[in-house]
Length: 303
Image (cartoon, rainbow, N blue to C red):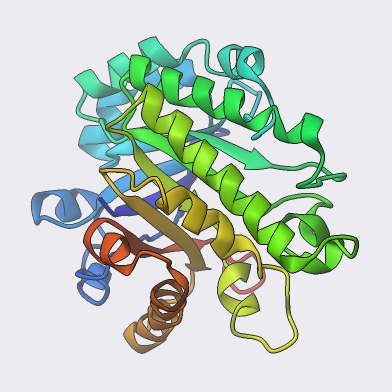
């Protein structure tokens, strides 16, 4: 499943367009400027990665589906709280998503059925070898998968962007001078595999979205840049569990990108990286996909 997404600010319901395109619809997606037209013509789903009030979603579920053409939400910041972090723990997940079951029920009744829970990383002292920190990841994702299933969500969105001050430690091997590269590889793959394992134990049918941010594309194609050198190890860990409904890699593009050649080139870069570094090419080709999501470029895009 591949998605065509928007970002939404709950203040005044300002919509910020984020286009996500699949291999098959990479060029034709430019014809689907209207999300309702996309739905009726067999195009990608339309989601919002959102900052929102869940009560607002319940009250206006039919408007989101019938008028705005929205097919689902990635629940990030909700009711002024969140998002869950990889290390938040089950209690925090339950607190943030306490209104999710009735919200998803209202959305599904209106036709909005492609909904995902979400967790990201924002930890200045991130360390893959901090056993106490790593021990929080599995129970957190177990709780996320459980609430996703029981509330009627489609699956789990794993945000792998290094927010805050953890960029030098999340995927950059230079942050670990005391450890050999093979130690980092084995550790990160193991944790990725554990994340997939607990998601599938709780929710075998879950769809998994992975959001590596746009920098992943440029970093892996820039000599000497190592910010994301270890990211593929995490993906390969996830994929080693072969989630039956696949993994969708959602990379960012710029909102102002409308030229088909530029979009195709960018897609080719990402697809090439995934095909070149995936351990299990049969699984990747048959179950996984790459999508380009467009984040608003506040430098070149007017409000």
